Structure formats: structure tokens, C-alpha cells
Image (cartoon, rainbow, N blue to C red; front, side, top):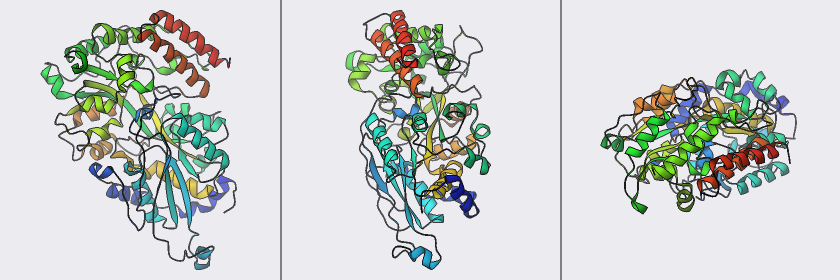
Length: 510
């Protein structure tokens, strides 16, 4: 198929779109048990696949508070995991499909950072059940700069890539002309992302247009060891708990000295902004900036958040220090499931590790809670639930219509295979009860379903992550300055003043 206008190709194939209900059933039925997710899966027949991936962690970098950047089990190098189907009937050579009246067989290339066996494999199997003439080859990306560069290079060349889910730099792809526009395609398909997903979708638009569909919602919540909570004589946090409650709870659940010390709370280190995470419940990330994101504002909540973290790190010793986290490269799942920290504040993907009995054998039940509020800012209530896993189309794909068919199916129905492994769908068609049933089923002894439903169905306004190249750079330099303060090299006031000044220079393009 020649490169052509993606809208024209999509319209010409719309009549052949598959029935959505069938797909959901297929995807759920094919979901593999988590215990089978290690190593290599191989097979033949429709949709069977192989997987190979490395496992090193990387710092989050440009995307502030981007939850999935913390998936430290995901590799740094891009690797390929291809579905290995039998050839469809009549696919004996060039033009064979057309001669037999069957669709022409071809290979679609899908790039992404999610481990192959934790959703992509199930998605490929379900899609090939309906489209046996399409072989899908999955290329595994890491969550680091090198993988992002590799993806950009492939997109610029146009070779071996049709659809992709970038692990960082979502808007940069549109800014660089490396993503096909989806605005008209979405309208033609009757998909209203603002209605489906909510106003947070605005942060994923470029120049008022759509170039991606965020397929998951990565809620950032407290994961709580309920045994340690009970041992400390404490109950689960109330929905309106405050930072004073957090300080007292974290201190009460901290114990020991030196390398044997266990902490009350751990904030995800490799997001680069541990100092800012204590204020996520009352200080939205976008409030750091003016309306058009051309200036960082000196909001007093920044100092309050940094001071809270500094107290927990230095005075209460209820959270590991920046220096300790950098030296030990602490991971959220490791901290929670080995008992090193009683509470962990991180993304929903930690659920897949909680359910992995083989890698993390444990008997305690995990409860969930929203981030605390501040008595100093009544009425300011937020919940971090960043949109993640945006799926996009290469503007140089040889199969634009087929790529769009796959993308819209994946958003509405094909995501079902990802849910079991801790990814929450952004599509409004999935209810909180449905998601809870898929995630918790078979793990009722490890997950507290009551607090799960209450937390993940919160009606608090969302606190979306900041998108855009300039804003991300500004956040990075601000984080770097505050980290110097946490290491004792300057005061918090100096750090914020320096970070704001440097960040504003970055926003101005200096």
C-alpha cells in the first residue's frame, strides 16, 4: 500500500471494523496469569509470540510526575517481541492475498515500553483472531533517553514503525512532526476524548489538535502495608487526612537504625521530584506556572512541600533521604513488598508487583489512600491521575488506514489485556467495579478491595502532569536545585529562588 492520506485510508476501511464486544471477551479470556510472565513465551498459530527484554531502571527525566517513568523493571534498550502466526491461507507470496480474494497479508510494527507479556501479547492475540492477515511485531522500548532517541530515529526514517506508545516526550513528537494528526479521524469515528477522558486530555493536545490517545490513567496513590498499620495501632487514612496526619503516621511506622532502618513512607525517587510529592493533594503541578506556562510562579506551597519532605528526611527520619535513595536506587515495589517502607506513594503499576507472588512473596494485605490535604489550604483537593500510555501513528506508515483501525480498537476494547497487570484504562467504558474485579480477582488476600474502589474512583479534581518541552525543562532544573538543598548544599529558600530563576530562563529559551 502506498503512503497516502491517513483519513482517506481509514474511511475506505471503516465498514470492515470488528465488533467491539467480541474483542473485550477475547482479550480477557486470553489474559495470562502473572506467574507466567517471567522468561520467554513461544508458540505458533494465530497471535502466539516471543518476548525478550532487558531490565534496568532509569530516571524519569523530562516528564514531571509521569508515573510510568518509574517502571524500573522496564529495560533501557529497545527489543523486539513479534507475534509468530502461521501464514494466512493464500499468503504464499507477493500478491497472493489479492489473487485469492483475501486481504493482503502484511506486518504492522508496534513500539512501546510495556513489557510484552503484560498486555501487548494478549492484545496482539485478540486482534489477530479478527485479522489473521495482519502480523504484529512488538518492539520493546526502555524508559530512558537512549530509547527515546531510538524511537525518534525510527520515526524520522519511517522504517519498521506504524503505531507507537512513547515512554516520554509525548508532545515533542507532535512538535517535531513525528506523529500523524488524529483530530479528523476521531471526529469521523464519533470519539470525543474530552467527554471520554475529561479536561486532563487538554494537556495531551498540541496546538489545539489531537496527535495521540492516552490509553491508561495512572493513578498515583499511597500503597499501605495494613499489617504494619495495625501493629502501630493505627487505622486506614480517611479521605480527608492531612499532612499533619501523614507526619504522625509515617513517624509511628518507622523503626530501627542504620541499614536495618525501616521507614514509614517512601516517595518515588526516580520521578526526580520527591520534594514536591507531599503536596500533590493540595498543589496541582500546573499551578507552578502562569496560565500560558511562560513563567514559574513562586507559590508558597512549593516551600511548604519541600519543608515537609525535609522534616521527614532529616528530623523524623521517616522517609529515606535523597542521598540514600540515590545510592541504593530504591524502587517502589521493592520498598513496599520487602517491608523496607510501610507506605509507598507511587503509580498504579505497582499493583502488578503486589500480585507477583513468585518475585515478591508476602502475606500482608495492601490498602490504598489518596494524598493528604493541607489545613492551610482549605478547599484545595486534588488527586494525581496522570494520563499515560498515549498511542500514536507514524506519519510515514505504509499502512495508515490499518494503523488507525488498530489504534481506535485498542483504545476502546483492546486495552483489556493490560488491566490485569496494573494499568487502569482511560476509556470511560470501563467502570471502577469492572477494573477492580479484573485486578483483584484471585488476589483478595493481598489487596484491600474496599479501599481500592474508594481510592481509584475518587471524585477529587485531577492534578495532571505538566507536558511540553519547555515546561519539562523548567521543572527539571527546579528539581535539581531543590535536590541540592536536600543534600545540604544550600537552603530550601535559595534552592527555590535559583530553580525559579533558571527555570524561567529555560522557558524563555535562553
